[in-house]
Image 1 (cartoon, rainbow over the protein chains, first blue to last red):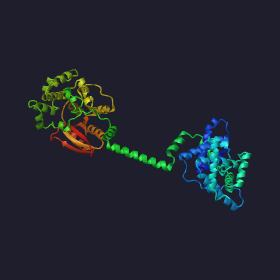
Image 2: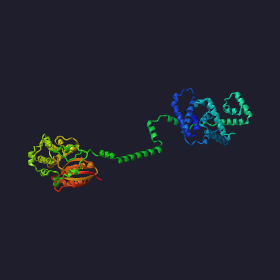
Image 3: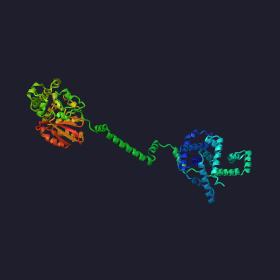
Image 4: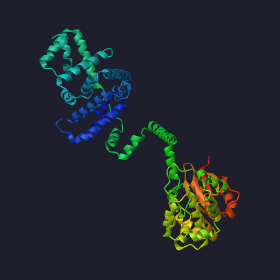
Length: 159
Length: 387
């Protein structure tokens, strides 16, 4: 659990927006994992199984409206260490990432989860298809449309 | 490759999912189309930006909280949390609900007279069975006088209307029986030799016969026979069966006062009877004799009074105690719809002191009292709730 806590929490906070909601969702994920660990078949990677549960929990919460109204500012997410030593460049980078998070948050849920799993968490197309129980073609098309939408929204900020 | 086809492959190109030939076709198109080239560069920059975003880290203590959540809590903790948490919301609501229920219960209690009656009955000691007529311990009591009480109990005033005043008695008694019977009844201490000689001693086996005989007699004859019984009780030593009758002590109920119980030798063993037996033993022989005589008489009360009290049970007990203290005894109790009637016998010498003591119990008012009191005054006190 220690090894996967950041990944699960990362997906939850990208999907739900508020850290408190994300913590609740991540806690629910691990409780489900704890209960269903005996039923884990092992024919899939543990990480894929965890992402599948996390995605399901987040999408269920989003669908049921079980989330807080207020969302954490994207600045909070973007204020995380970016690795740029130059303060001006770091500030510019933070603004860019804040815009990126706003744009991700505006995506539809089905596109957002694909982008999060692929571009923020680094899952392969196959893993995404398995976690979300989608066809590969569906994953590719949703990912392409999500990226195109983000590009259009970030057009003014990109070089 | 057209621009649309080229733009559809941007994602595959960024993720390096194209074959070398497909990649070469896309590069060839991008080299010749500046719009597609610019869009592809921005597309790649967006994806690159996302890849460079630092991963989010879980908050400190997250694992501990999850582990605590996975440990099953005891059922009582879950129950308490479900009932009381969050405190600011549930406690005021629960307090309001309790107050609402309490108000509802009080309102319902006040609105329902049956509930009030039930509560009153529960707090009041068990009352003896009611009787409709004064105690008639003699074997000459008609069956109708000792029968169980029907629901509409005759008012005490109806009984007292047959007052000892001669003028009133004359209206209820046949003329030929009235003077002799009343004289004998009022002068209980003076034996009537005629009646005593005519009527055999009230031995136990003779009682049913006498009772059967009197069942068919009229009121005047009945009173005459009662009067005949009284001197007999005073004049001669009581036979064994008759001597036991006074030891039954103060009557507990109409059943106790019935003819059958009067001649039964063993009273019930409850504490009240034990106290009354003691009281009867302690009473002076003259008073005991008088009391015994009165029990054998179907005499109406000499004095009627009203006593308004708050606690009926306590008042009854105190009346019995006062009567005993003044050399008298309690004869009967009965309950009516809104009152209880206690009948006591008090020696004339102690009558005034008894009244003074009774007046200290509650609001006391003598409603009827003859000018000439007999030797043993039969007092009927109606207990009413104090307003």
